[in-house]
Length: 503
Ligand code: NAP
Image (cartoon, rainbow, N blue to C red; front, side):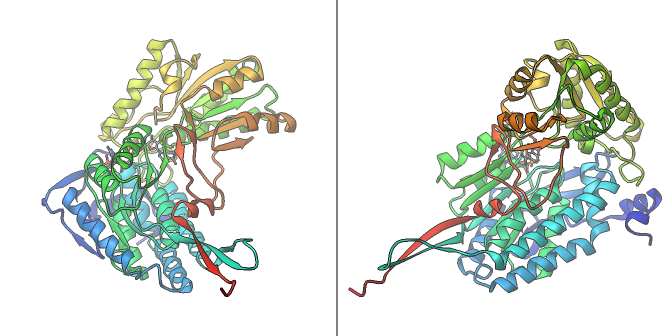
């Protein structure tokens, strides 16, 4: 069997035809059906075909998963293991993810419609690297001793929060699950993971691999089924101590209400975005900028929270830049995700396809000119494909500039001076990320400080590394994934005083 990057489209199609993924709930180290016995259909974006019938869990299943997680946390079967042992387990998990590269890449491509070249080279390796990185932190994290004088010893230590409910979206299922699991497990928590209904398969396989790596039963559980039922049950559950959520701002707000109305459990939210790409007149190499800006919106068919979806460009370079991005867009025609030559895959499902096309129509009616893409293609495949799309002449007050489209759609808004550019960039409910393009280093520093976003890329876009935090300002949420700062979100500080006076 040909594997990895050497496999051809025929190899991948053969494998896709025979794949039989585990699709039941993973609770207390075992797969089991939903209490109701119900399932839902998992559909491939590439051709609309059935991949698996997945257990459709309910409140009773959440109770079972939380009880398993609670037991495993309360008896300290994971958190009390020596750091070197916990590190070995997570390193083994990283290795197992690498060893199952083909299998996980195929599941992810089928579920999400991502090109197999990306899942092989980005999604799976990045998930493995995340587990490795967090494993390495386990025996390198120290507490503090407070400067409280000679008659006292005050120790400041970090303890795991307890049972974590992790709710994740469909656009980067493995990567985002790994961010949350890596940090939560490294700090000794137990987890109930709820993947999105469009993309449940890689999370289930990951849980099985974690068990094989030596993670004790009950420490990682996966529940599948309707988010409105399962997510809300987790957020309101008295035995869940923390919710970590990545997804839409709308659902994030509902989770915030749920934890407020129940037991004010800890919560972090990584939400939507509408990231600006500000291009000044002195941008320099227009071709290089066009390529990075184009990939910054079109990668993963625009289904990326930090996608640079608003081009805010100086009038003097706008025409040429937009033409170059449109030329790149024409080169990037979407294709069969399982063909290793394909660089843009499908949209995740028919609902998302309709939503994106609805926004293109809205843009037209608001007054935008569609200068590239804008329609469904490859309909004969049965899948959901939209080519790179550019809406030119957009006013930042229009809905297409304010709402997250979550598709390969770039809006173009021109400006005349830099204060105006910053005002347009910051005039958004979101603040996840931003790009700034200029050759002037002073301007780059001055302006990047004034952009209200959690990540600012200067003369680049979408640079990413597990070593640095990722997360947003404003309605893009709060708390951070990735890097050492993420560990704070899965621990609580304890101050312990000892009297040394001898009284
Ligand atoms: P979503 O609709 O908010 O769903 C996210 C997760 O929440 C899914 O597991 C979903 O389960 C569950 N869910 C749905 N309704 C729920 C409810 N009422 N209560 C609790 N949980 C609920 O988001 P999505 O469509 O999967 O993902 C796209 C969104 O994620 C975009 O807005 C994107 O910007 C955001 N995102 C943000 C980041 C970041 O780091 N800031 C990263 C990636 C994506 P079901 O699938 O079963 O409904």
